[in-house]
Length: 81
Image 1 (spheres, rainbow, N blue to C red):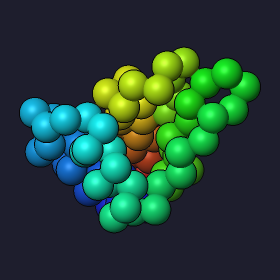
Image 2: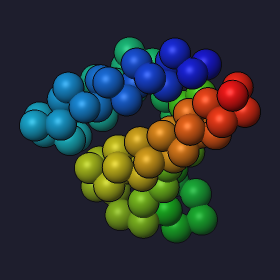
Image 3: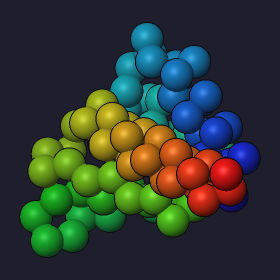
Image 4: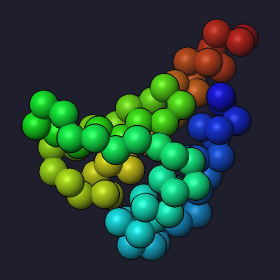
């Protein structure tokens, strides 16, 4: 799972200059990541990591998800040490 998260983070890092809506759509088509509207916010989920944004802006969802993914990877590395 951590390899999938690292690949996803690399994808977003490599495409940060692109249009966020297009980058998110392309990433979701590759990974099958979920995008839902729940309780007044948008939720992006992949590999047990969720990011949320109260508006539908793709850039906000990407930032939220990548922060959560980095925290999860850091926690996994700490447990492995």
